[in-house]
Length: 461
Image 1 (cartoon, rainbow, N blue to C red):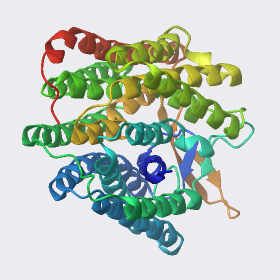
Image 2: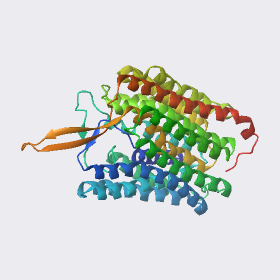
Image 3: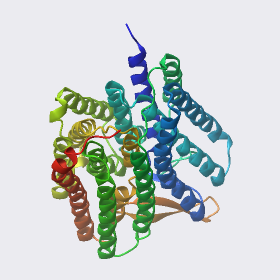
Image 4: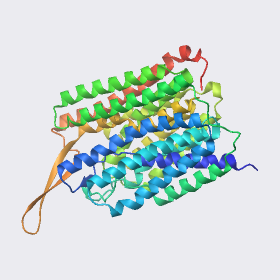
């Protein structure tokens, strides 16, 4: 029995899951930290900046490894990146000050981007390993922050432990598992199986696309965040313009690829928009459902969605089917914003999302490894979608406390929902669902509209 394929598939899932965990950047309204405003701003700014840098590094890593050609070298690079992440986790308790944490955060996100890129390069072109890698990345995107769910009955504002990010450091079992599997995959790699040969036009387009989308997401998300105290009408005009720019940029970049490759970028964008309401429900309120239950339901749903896509004949796999299912989440959010606040309804919402997400991603898997790296990291760097759903419904508040001597202390709480009026809050709740539904609808439209034109082009890669 040849165990090389199972080893590389397990290594791909573990490495992608680890990279995704590191790049997860939850806008958690139950988070608070005791520090000066300037330090908080710099610490928070490092989170999204690290994610967009990782997006570019992932694509660049694939491009570089395609020139090298060795799958064993790709796995060894993945192992090195995992060692870096282990080193960061070890160092966090021993550093002092925000600057040191920020430096470690950038080191960590850069290593995660390279880790994702090296894993994609190592397995792309082999179907089972591609699906396993996608499963690991998707699991991390939706479920990585489950272990930090705000618990029902807990204080709404809880001081964060020392960490490089709001989600905390990766668990040791995931770090060690990814390291061991990457080393085993490197040992088992056969020299006759080489990394996918690069096509320079696709590589250049993917690199330019990654840089463009990274800059757009970082700049536009910061623009939306700056409106936190603005008038609702102003906020929504900026949100609408930002979403339009992101969608136009994504469509233009996707259209530069063949249909097989271009649809993956649109599918990744669509499922990201569909997932944002669920992620907001998971992170924005105390959750009574046990974290283990949320994790199991989400995991089973992903397996179901991806399994169905695998069973469908290749010529019948249409990612828009998964997008249609995932679109039910923002549709319900637009009609009934409080739907996901109950334990059962939250699990139902998560199940529907993950089935659609899993099907859409597997059905749209691209030929080109560089496009795969771009699409797999893009959900973690889609900062505009996160800001578009949190800022219109959020405000920064200051919790005033007094010490034993009567001295006033101010603790900053980020993104605690404090609506200016019940009417404006209810309107924003509905509009956020509408906005994400329109994004998913745009992605479905472009995939369907360009099917004939793109499919007449020979796939490249």
